[in-house]
Picture 1 (cartoon, rainbow, N blue to C red):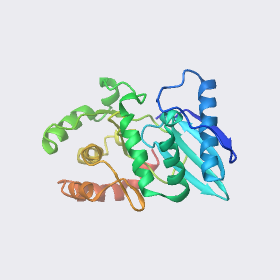
Picture 2 (cartoon, rainbow, N blue to C red; picture 1 turned 45 degrees about the vertical axis):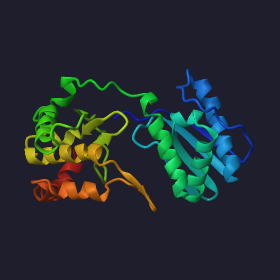
Picture 3 (cartoon, rainbow, N blue to C red; picture 1 turned 90 degrees about the horizontal axis):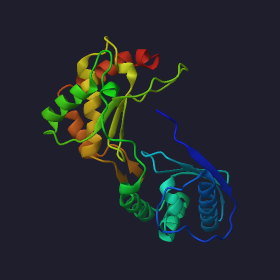
Picture 4 (cartoon, rainbow, N blue to C red; picture 1 turned 90 degrees about the vertical axis):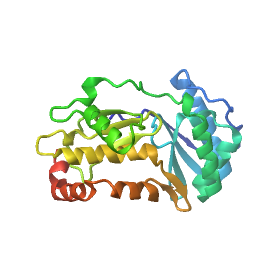
Length: 254
C-alpha cells in the first residue's frame, strides 16, 4: 500500500480565524499549507499548547493524536482543512481532554463528508484479485453468498508486497470504510496456505462492513461485541486461529 501523502505544520498557541465550513480538495500544495497553518494555529490557540499537525489522505484513520511533554501531535485527513468552527473546537476538546461528546461531533462530520472524500476507483480489476494460488474475487463471492446473502458490496484485491525488513507483526487483511475496499496480504497467496484460512481472513474483513467500529468511553472499538459474536460463529474460526498461531513465524518472514 502506498504511504499516504501528508503535510506537516507546527504551531504555538495563537489566536486564529476558524477555517471555512465548506470542504474542497485544495488545488495545490501552497493552498494546503496555508489552510494547514490556519488549522494548526486554531487548535494551538484553543488548547493553549504547541501543536504539530500532519495532514494526510489516509481514508481509514481520519483522526489520530499523541501527547508528549507539552506537545500535541495530530494527524488529520485533509477534509478537516475546511472544517467549520464547531468541528475544530471538537477536535481540540477530543485531543486535549478525551471528550466523548466531541468525538461524536467529529464522527458526524466525517460521515457528512463521505460523498466528497477523494476515493480510489471502486471498479474491480481482475489482475488485482487473481493471485498465483487464490482468486480473491472468487473467494469473496463464495463467502458473500454463503454468509452474507450477497449483501456485502466491496472491491477486493491483493495488497502490495512489503519490504524485506524484519517485522514483529503482520496485518493479513484490511477494510477501508471510505472506499469499501478489502486488501489481503500477499503472504497468503502461497500453496502451503490452506484455502479455509484465506476464506476466514476475507470473511473477517467483510464483517467490518456489516459491523462498523463504535466509539466507547475509552475510545474507538474496532471490533464491537456483535462483530466478535458473528466471527466466532464462522465454521472455520477455531481452525483458522490454530493455523495462524502455528504458522505466524513463517508469515512474518514473507
